[in-house]
Length: 332
Ligand SMILES: [Zn+2]
Image (cartoon, rainbow, N blue to C red; front, top):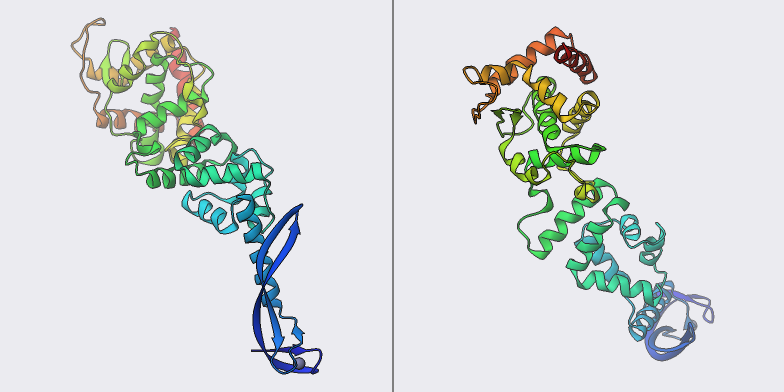
């Protein structure tokens, strides 16, 4: 290793010596070992930029150790293990969006900021709580990635997204509706399931609905929201603006909400009574006769394909023609 010696006026071999240094940083006296290069020939001190960087890092480490502050590698580790970016992490903590980036680049955090990071670093449970409570501050993708990584870390087998597709569909509909009763929810599920098959090619969920007196009903969903009776489902889930749904699934549900969401549960019930799958499944039953007959998927598919043809649907928004027609029908 050679460096330029001002004394010898040429590149010379050098030796590295360590000396104890005391330095004042932010009013604190900090001790650390400084590395100094000396010319092998004349013993003059030589400037080596690598050593300057190492000394700055040593000083930084000593200061942080003295103050009990989090180090840059610890911050980097934290971001990696929770699979979260610098910007989203900053936002979760309620900081400016570039604050954490500055810390990662070497700015020394205040004790308060540092303690927050340290707590997050030491406790995945605390981080998870922060993530879930502030999920509205980050994108859905960022939330999802980090949520799963953190749960994995904690060793939880089930993740937030272990809920079934139909649960996700319910949560999504509820979060997108101003007010929705369990009765109306059931009907929107029925139409969403059917039109997803028509427009996308597959049914959105595997569950079958049954031909109950009040229209098609998904049994598990009925029991899930039963306690609400005829009242709107109050939206406690709204804080979870995160759903395990694909774009096409959301698109179909959005269209269903647009086209059918304006009708009351009772009107929607009558609308589904006017659809072939429900009628066909209830053949032989009186209006008030209870039934748990399954409305078969092939019957749903056949009928809604006919609807698709009849209304010459080109885009999902064309479902409107059908919903308006159904509404006209039940008024007469
Ligand atoms: Zn020299």
